Image 1 (cartoon, rainbow, N blue to C red):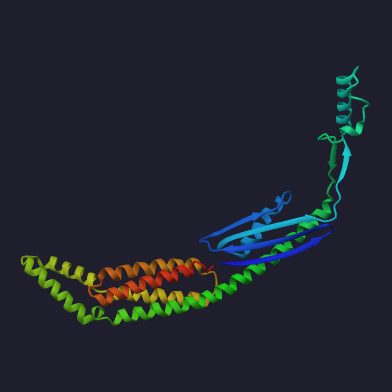
Image 2 (image 1 turned 180 degrees about the horizontal axis):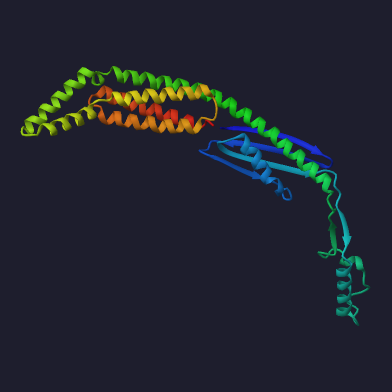
Length: 291
């Protein structure tokens, strides 16, 4: 979800630049920074970005300048006359003030005022339309950068899924996961149970046998792990908006591996479970970069 896009444009005396950036995010968060006077473009800019992306932290920044615009000024005659009148009243009958010169008051704040030109509505509308059109160009460049990154990450995810699948199959070949080994382990556990409590009712013995079977049989967890990795592969091939779906699959993979580790009764299977947890975490970290 990381990328950068830029575009520039001009119209009449205006010129502008768009910069669009994207970083990882669980959802979609769009931030728009606009110069003073262009706040009216905020909603439109956010809407366009929201139509192009569904995940990530998106930053849109617009800078604009007005070229060759010479400011106009006017004299605030009311303030100037008031200053002269006050000065005359203060120094009347004295020689300390000297001859009154109106230009002495021009440096007083407010005497010289800038004159703001009334904007041409049609010109401003055309300018704003062009600014939005250039935003779409910057967002297209950002989208392309994200797709290139997504392609590279997808290849990494494929390799990680292959490693996860290999460990699942290795766990399936582990002696503890084989039917005969499971029966032997169940038999040993039942013998221990019957020696400790020989007067157990038959119904209770059946319940205990079922519970012991559930505790030692990891085949169901392995089947679900295979199903989840297969689904993840299909999503990567599909290539659409898959980030949140893969994120969910990571949670399910972790859940099954945790159960597998809790059932493991030999060192090899325990080590396979730990390796799986590490690989799934690496996979999850990469998934955060996928839209």
